[in-house]
Length: 474
Image 1 (cartoon, rainbow, N blue to C red):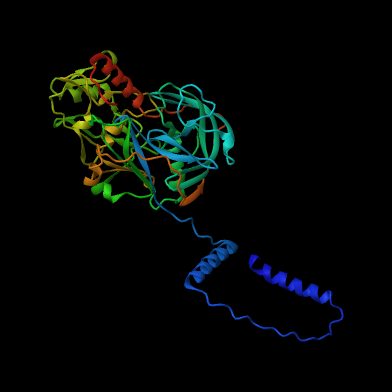
Image 2: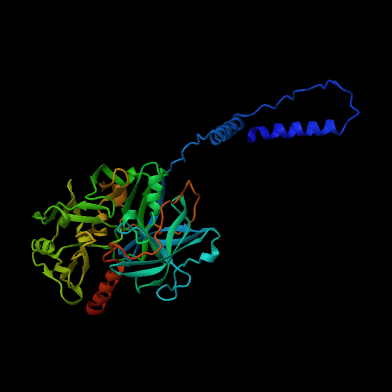
């Protein structure tokens, strides 16, 4: 109908002219002259062709699918590998917030402007400043190994890495545990599946992957290492999160994809082989082997019986006591070669990552710790101690996790003097609308897996500094 409107208006104007001119002779012949159109350029014809195709597609219901795309979010390394965060934007007009990137949980939340305890010095979200914010009407509560956050649910436009999701449900939290956030971080972005979301909402990443907004339905991480850099600052360059593609400059060889151990919940893989100094630790198949691949966890945690066997292969290793209970110490002059396999090749862990800290001149602290999880959580949590050694890919379809060797380009960024990313708001390449219902009431559900997060590491370093005056930089 739109294409006939100018002609209808033209006919109407002629009709009005005839009615308003009764004295005009009947049977009058009107001379019609055709205007010679100006020559169109190729660019003008191109714009016309696009507009015409889209107009016809809309009219006859043959609209083309949304254009797919790719995007990258640069990551910041906080407190010498204790946590990794990126920036996103919420609202209209959009406001940027730094959030922990966590593949071990599935909810997005940020600190509320009404939060006055444990929120000092960080950016907070004020719903009144966004014209597109809508309250959902449900309370929100989530528990992590390092604390809790609670508040209320709402929906708004969320942008990240050149992508935008309208009506994205997220939580605005006014009650946050001490130490859960560390300036400049304002919240957390869960990157696991909807089935474990405390809010019940479809996660931001899952909406993009399922809608076809990405060229490929996957996201990939490269994380940097500053743990062994005595000159490391509080904030350093942390790597990148690639959305919709894999960055071939950051890995070498092929990506080994491994199917998830169970239906989509956490990014679960079976830990099939764990070695210490060439000696394999026997791990039975089944739930005892399930490992969550978790960017939001600093270290590697697992059942005590397997870690006892692991550390028994390291000469001089002993269980920690006091503040270090659940951890293990070992002589600093001892070489530790650790590998992990998830049904494919074995992946080595750099000794720089395994050595969490040097407690004294002779005593070091290992990065594998005892973790006895509940029934709703997997037995193993594989965090950044491992992930800093690989290029990791989290694929939506088919559901799988992939690992590849880091390239020389990626390795050169460890400890490099690379500028720290800033929270920016860029142009949007693709926009989709969030779908899925949110329950009227929510609870914490399965415990998200950022265990232990940077707060525990900071506490450990605080103890180390007080007791040993070692001057470690975290």
